[in-house]
Length: 122
Image (cartoon, rainbow, N blue to C red; front, side, top):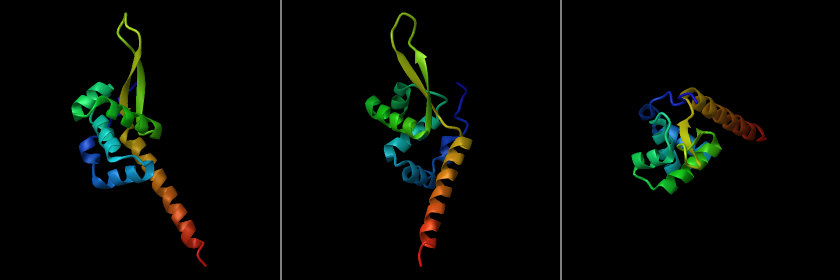
């Protein structure tokens, strides 16, 4: 999988973006923290993400599952080392362009719905 992490998490991790993520994706502060942690990495396993954040692996895994379900992160399945059974995932953040497009779509939909409500007033 190509490196989907093409933006600097430090410049995108601002209160307004956090507010939009929370509002449109109904995700927690912890989920958003994990999202920006993944943005700062160029693909990582759950162990590396939890270690970099100093959070429990199971907590980070639950956040990653919610972020994956929301479409904010992507994952690539890998086979374990030869001779071992199992699989693991490498997690990537969506690109800056994808995030921008996703947020603009939500903002435009929200805006249209609110105008329709206001327009319905008689």
